[in-house]
Image 1 (cartoon, helix red, strand yellow):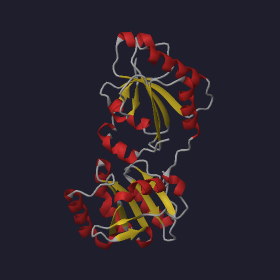
Image 2 (image 1 turned 60 degrees about the vertical axis):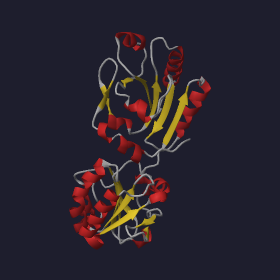
Image 3 (image 1 turned 30 degrees about the vertical axis):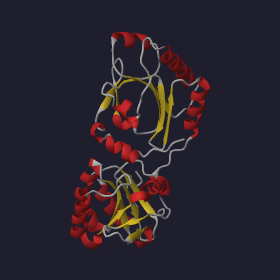
Image 4 (image 1 turned 90 degrees about the vertical axis):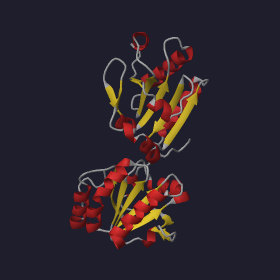
Length: 301
């Protein structure tokens, strides 16, 4: 089993996050839906691909035997033609038309058929032809049993270990942060994270903020460092910048980060009180409500 980093992968694809993939014969699947739940994508070309036909038959048979499977099985084709529609019209599986090769590029597809099993970046397996029915069904059962870790699992518990350095290179740990505090997991390559910077004025008026910087484990660029330094200068003690560097992978796993931005509200008692994934226009109001009542609506979302 390979663990992927959806926060980074989705950042790379954020330019298409508002788009939808057309389905063969009509309809569409929103990009956001693909980032949720468990998926089995079979990249095929048809007609005329005997191995593709075989893989489709195996998947169709496996899917028909499931009664409560959480796995969404879908075929992915690179084009839409009358011949292909005719060849697949009897297949009871959705067929995604990936004409811009977004999914094919993301999963580095080289041959057909290739089957990708994927669960929100925390489970990622790829079977390239040749593989057999037993190989395929074994991986499907592994995905079926896999429990997707979510940051909401941390509610009510102390936040996991977090250790990095500030912009001066001084070690900073979770124990050094004030309480309460808003942990803001921020990726330097994420447009949605940068858009969320517009809320920093409001955040810092309510409570201290710790910006936990994700940069794919690399050194900060001069541009990113200057931007973060300007923010630190503007907000002073209300903002702590924590650069994870080589600790990024283990920290994302501990905090179950699936995409960015992700926010954790840590209360005065040092426990995680609320979690928000992705940008939300109501976040400031929800934080304010928690600080006033201790019970934010939607704060675990």
